[in-house]
Amino acid sequence: MIARLSDFQFPDLAARLYPATPARPWVLEVGFGDGRFWPHHAATFPEPPNYLGVELSGVSLLKAHRRLRDAGLTNAILTKMPADVLVREVVPHGGLDLIIVNFPDPWPKAGHTDHRLLRAPFFRLAASRLKPGGSVLLTTDHDEYFQFACQEAQASGVMHVQTGEPPAAALETKYALKWRDLGLGVNHARFTPTAHPPVPHGLTTPYPEDPTTVPHAVLTLPDTFNPQAFDKVTERSPGSRNADEGAGWTVILLDLYQGLRRDGWVALAHVVEGELTQEVLVGITAREDGTHLVRLAKFGGPIITPGVKAAVGTVTRWLETQGAAVKHRGY
Image (tube, rainbow, N blue to C red; front, side):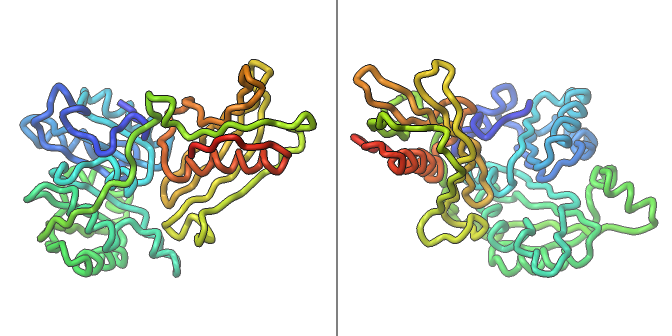
């Protein structure tokens, strides 16, 4: 099964995600590539654990989905999003038995180490989401990143580091086979939490069923309103120069389209909040009393975050520059 961010709850439960196998161990694989690892590793258990896989590549997502489907692994969920977003927002405290990271991107260039996944903040996050006795497994061919990850685990203050041999299935991945053909080896470590610090969840719910809680505004457009005057708009949260700083949001209004009913418009917004990116639609719809309703559209199942609320505000503020008079703000 392939799941979108909006298909999850925040946090979610194994019993909801895997109703047929709720009591089995829950394993997360970060960066599953083409999916070769899990069918091999799942076969080493008496019963396949519940599997959650996260990846950034859409092509890899489809390849892995076919591979796991052909292997008959019905209790497997794959998703495309940044790993830290998934672990922080979807996985409950003490929910996972195992986190597996095989051959992660080492970001080897100078100045790029902040892009690496296995840094102290992630280890503290992982420790909060693992059950007692759970662990993070790392297998990599990159010596420097391996040493870096071990040092970061120790610096986190919540992980015990143990090096050793990787699971046999880790040597069946695409990168492991390539490395083995060159006659080279791999590094492996098990990181076991010594403490489970609470790390809060930030998201709440997808698009709510109650329309009164959806970010919105009510305004009156001037007779001179010209939608063709639209040009790309960028807004950032106060005190944040850009979304790469890990805090705040950036909203970019990309385009404005005529609505299907011809009595309104739809704005396309690109919203970036740290590692989380969403593309949302904000409708501008005529009402019987002559006003217009600016409201987040349900299409795509958006997650209502501070940045998404801000997108509705960005559309509203742009309309104000075109002469609109705002009667009510609900964002």
